[in-house]
Image (tube, rainbow, N blue to C red; front, side):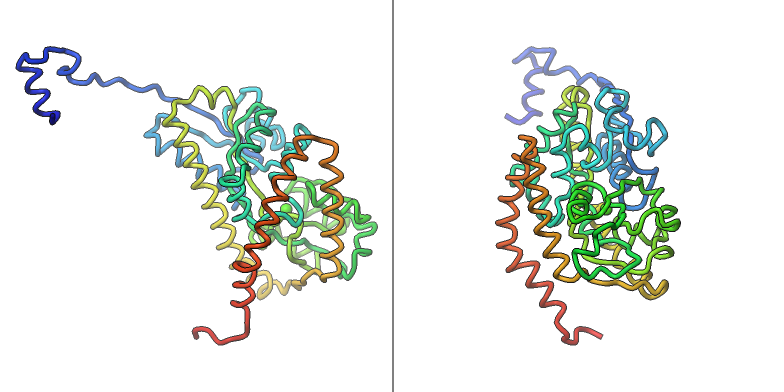
Length: 365
Ligand code: CA
């Protein structure tokens, strides 16, 4: 029966039910207002974009039923207290990077970036089809939060150095700003990893308080002016091949959210995740050209001897660290399995294609 006929009959008294024929009452749905703290300065290029995109998407897609307002680092709490603020319900949402929370749950750093681990595309595939989301949700549940991947930097650069890096020996005594698991590897190679927040890096490099630093890639490194204080810009960023940014939601606030708003938050994160990576790819391309052509930066590839050495040390360090924590071990084993299959396929796809594209043939004008 068509709805029109049904209503006609109903109002004709065949099916008398006021509930059916009454005009639907307009019920104003309650508006929910959330605050999102971030580990980034407000509107920070690339890294901060995910938070801004996310808030805008959620607020607009929900027709204002769930409104999210972004607060930069230091506005409500300092950058690295973002997780506490979300976990204890001071605010409902946060945006940062999983390795910042390794002091609370060590397994968090494995889903951020693993030396010689997964690329951005592989990492997303692991979250969506490789069991990664479920493992990440377990890690974040320990923090009292729900997890979403919410941006990715893509392959980072190896860092800025004032001496040439010829062999693994050159890491001995090297004071380098490098966070997370990459720092553990540098330490095992004989260096001294230093953890500095972004804004403290340029003066430390300039004064010689550190010998070397990594930050992100051409886009962010150019903005910081790191080329002014270091001669050589090394690649690839073996330590952060596809660094994940996280959106974390207070678990109680998340569970109270109606199903349709949950879907909007999920979709917003999927969109932000993809947009952030696109921003990095587009801006890195242009910024690399500026660094080389305008600032005369010497861009050097790490010799295979160093990469091979760091790869071996990484395998040892990661296995050793995970042996002390059951959840880290489970996450590491899952990533290892995914990585093994990813190497099998990427050898025939991305890796071979990119090498083919770099052959010296003439293409276009
Ligand atoms: Ca980095």
